[in-house]
Image (cartoon, rainbow, N blue to C red; front, side, top):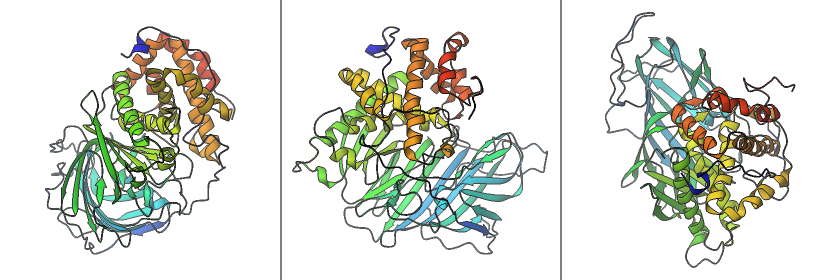
Length: 528
């Protein structure tokens, strides 16, 4: 454990600060009424897809589809970790900004139910005109499956009922028309969008929806917070870039291979596989104490001859390495061999499996003082490798389970690396916004980003700090470590979060829970 965990240290209760936004009065962002594209699909021919894979079929194969109630033999699999595997062939036309995608999904039914349909969360279709669904087919068959795409929900009728532990293979072919950053209903979410110098593919694939109590979970998208709730899976993605600029770099997590204009990425036990392309990236890297390679990609304004943003890339890389080492000590091991940090042309920051974006405004605003958003947001996004990647949650209904812990992880980082900045953090990051609201609010209870951040991030940091005071320093970090260990690879809930705490210590948190929470099962019901 790190130095500040040597004893049960109770920290003084101070105020709190802000989210991934400037400290000056931020603008109110109202939620536009979504009018998602609706497509009902039953086509007779499989479309021609530009990028064809030369790899073998997905490792999960459905050799037998039982009749209702009939037991089936366990699906044959060379992947002991994941019941879901995505094998993706994609071709990007850099001139048209369109991506032709052929996504082969191998799914093993571990839901506990016999399934008549398979449902996917298809985030890009929240914006009209982005997705053109072409066909959903089975391997070695031209016969399409009946499919319906309504907003973010893609429902596929299975050819036969799928029993527990049985596997189903299918392929989804579609065209993705990527929008410029700043356009559409979700202008701040440039992780799926392009600028003059950056092209991002984040949350671009349909992912098997989470299933709870016999229901598939496909939250509607709004422009406040995130709404993803994504089961862990294995990913293999091949991207071919056509009509691309010279010196193009394609950045992604996991294992990477490049042959001419084709890049291949492989990542296991992940929530997503996100790519970013630019011909202006500059790379630097460092190896963390645990052997993880941390790679930083910045855009051209931070060349050695640049006088702006003094040492910003070095600060971002040093912060990412130190945060990765610290959180690995406290919360449990980082799951991959690499961590990619990218400067983004969209605001603030965003987390993905093995890859995080940090907004370019934080790089440009850095002038040599670690008391900066560049430091805080980098540490925040790295912590999401635990609070989202390893332990996921329903980001629409219980966003505090990742964002409150990620925000408080900034403070934990400063305590260890820059202890002289801890009082500043409370004043600058939290107190300046006078946050209020219930921490366990859903994203749908807000009509502005500011109110959401104040309640979930900032009041959330207050909640987590009070919990640390309630149980003591060592017990607090042991709790978080045990929570990660118990929920790694799962979709966590508030109940599983509290269950990781011994009963006597849980009782010690009662007053704090009553003060900050409304919907927790173990807290008294509070009026809306």
